Length: 602
Ligand code: F6R
Image (tube, rainbow, N blue to C red; front, side, top):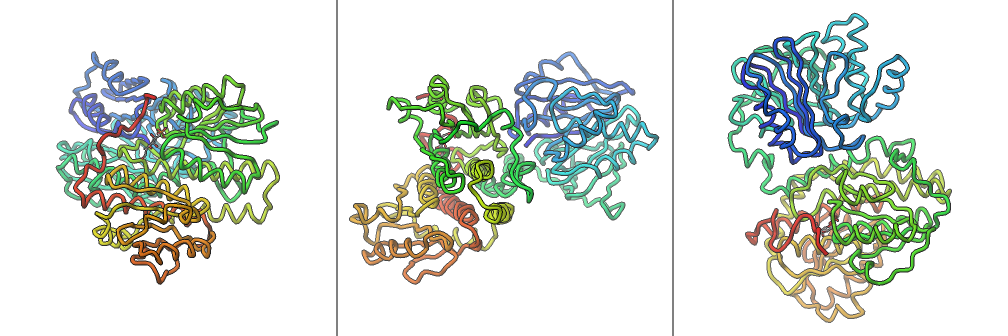
């Protein structure tokens, strides 16, 4: 996730770009930059850190004549947050800003380097501007060179490119990352979402994947693979708060819906039919490593717990999981043949960070799975895999968990392959299922509508038990945590087989059991556990692909070909259930009482 803004017109461009980027800062803020061409003169500014640093750097600069401008706020995917890696990226006479990931950038970079192009940054984005200049230098006009450039790109992108060779024009393209064009008489705006242009533009065109074109004052031309296209303009909404949530009632809701996209972003360049690849791990050797220990807190701990089943089952590596605050004071025995993994959305959780420091001190190799580049935990770790969930605004974590689970699944498969513990057939079955996950995370109106209707029956009672077995046990813990956090109702996650060892004493009609009943993982076992509860009059909400006659309520899931597909789908159901119950109770879903997004104290 990064944010992009562009403007063509006579107004003060610096302010339009900075104000626009301010609205998009939630999409990334490890560096920012802008480029302006005015009077054929190109100016470029970049600053590491939050936008305020770019404001400071440009405070003496004015740009109030006619000109073109592009700006970017960055969420690092390739390369550290440095000024050289900040956008816009420079060729000899052109600049580009980009949101997304160019999957084939290494191949393109090699080709361009062999031809003498010099790369200044570690980013995938820089290939775009050199590719453009390569084609332009070969005699193509600017638009043809741009068109040829984007034809070479694989992956997700939203791109704005400007060049001194045609200094009144912005070239644009969209494929998989958001981009829109705003119109106000002859002025033209670009942005990653509505908010930067509200109050400035009056009409908007939301670009579709595969569309590209060029814009000059009062003249925008749009194309796709079939040639030139009509521009479909709509009136622009005027409510900024609504626009930030893109029509969703809460950021948490928006983030639940984003999961299909961010999980797919997390897989780009890493998972394909050919296998699993993590460039980030090239310097981390598994030699001599025989086991894994994972430390984390809260939701990240639940991801860790679920992954321990995968590491042991697929990669045949002993895997122990500990809550970081417990690990710190138990005087743990640590062996150097253990890979120490931390998982953290924020990268700043104090207990997880301290656990990591202890492991390092004991000589363990460390790897973090984190959503925040340049965070303390990333800096402290030997290697880091970023989860690419984008900024998570809702305090209750949703999309970060989904991306953590995807990384952990990919990692367990990579280890399995390297250690020779998985057959080719099983490996390809896993990959086939994995590639279907983004689709399984798309939420239908029917499903959401059903959960909304059903939620009214779950507002009272004396407690919730979320139950599951195997990887669905950590998912039950996570489902219960989501409900607790935002509804303030008491909920517990439990291994289904453990209920009869005590908690079943609580069973009566006011005890709500949310039963995760996947078809592909121990269905008959969990069915018996739920029957035991039903016999004691507990109210049962079953989540399963298979109808269950003893269920008081039933939410039917679709994807029953692989346990992980069922896992991701059931994860969405539990998230939506917590959301809808919380909304009905009138709570502040995004900022629940007593909680904070980043827990930097012990
Ligand atoms: C739950 C939640 C918390 C965090 C926990 C760890 O919705 O957000 O339980 O998971 O505080 O935070 P990170 O992952 O940032 O280390």
